[in-house]
Image (cartoon, rainbow, N blue to C red; front, top):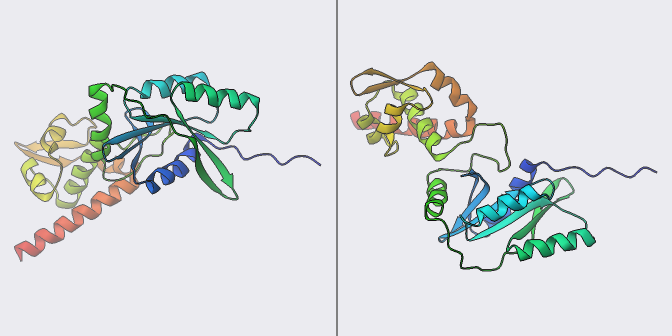
Length: 245
């Protein structure tokens, strides 16, 4: 009788069970932050997880480079057999001060399990990297990326600020940066409108901006994030109407 083939997990399949595990430990978790597949913060502690479908040298290079940015770094992989080869790999990961998380399918549900944690090391982090990842995590209102994603646009903190502005212009029509800020958009509103990095905004008069068709169309690339900020814009619109009444 032929053996049943084991379901293969893709990198994005590893993300959700590991995110759930870290969230249950009290971490704020975000996917795809500053080249890290998973970044998680808790009480000033920064944890990074690098995901791969199979163990290879590239994974080790990525994970050890992340040690410059984080307090603890793990590698996340589909569950592997407990054979001699993997006993040697586990020994190597420990020597490199990396933690290991396996993801396995139990029925139809994927679950994450920590095999071992990295040792507590007082390692000097790069100052710029130390600031960049927590700032990026704090700048996102939610987790709108899947770690391990490839060839798709990422919802960075900067892009989210631009989406928020676009949703408010969509709801209210042309506005000035000051009007947008009063309605609740980000502190960088003026610079985002002025630089127009994504080509979404049009200056139609001195200090007055509208949303281009391109911006309206590309909101569809981020449906969850756009829905979140459209609801926010609608609430602000209702509040403004009630104040005028």
